[in-house]
Length: 264
Image 1 (cartoon, one colour):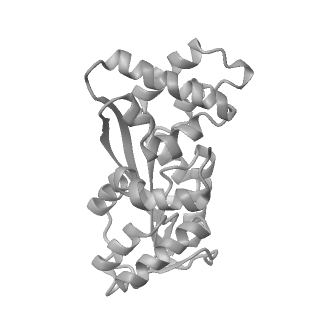
Image 2 (tube, rainbow, N blue to C red):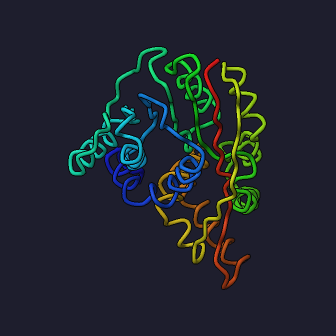
Image 3 (cartoon, helix red, strand yellow):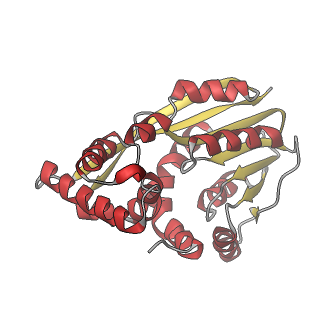
């Protein structure tokens, strides 16, 4: 049964933040310097951990305003900020045009279309000359999973609602395409940083029951199927992972990508 927004928010805070988001924010921390920014907008800030980390590092000089995806993650972020006496201003408000010296956006779970919308929103709220950065997976991610999923879809009789694995693969933009997108939306002085991150699980069962896969990745990839068909595909996926890897752990890689630039 699909999780509620409240359940997903708690899973995000307890598991996904460390297992998934941390891989992206560590790359951000290597390449983002807010020492000259009076204010920062953080879009899709989730339950707030990284925004509060940035506040600890830059908060004496930089006011941080974080927009959360829904009311459930916002409430967790607000509770954490209160407990830690964080200065981050968490909300769901729509920020004004040209308002921020720097904008950082988490697009790590966004579809290609939504990612483009988020980049456009990031540029809208940045002042001219302001820093804009966003992070997400790029082409080449999940290859090991998609290869096995392709076999499962081919072997199972799923009818016209079968997920199009080729489309899942091609929907992931290349790093060059992300740079082109940023340029087309008004960014200049664009740079991209890519690191390969490996996710490892003891076996197929550990992978499919991890909150990252069970509640965030697999539902997106299998959204065209009804609940019963999803269960069948996930079971077959688990079995094929173990058949192919035997006693070895199951690994897949993600191209963790950060694009930075300025509003032209």
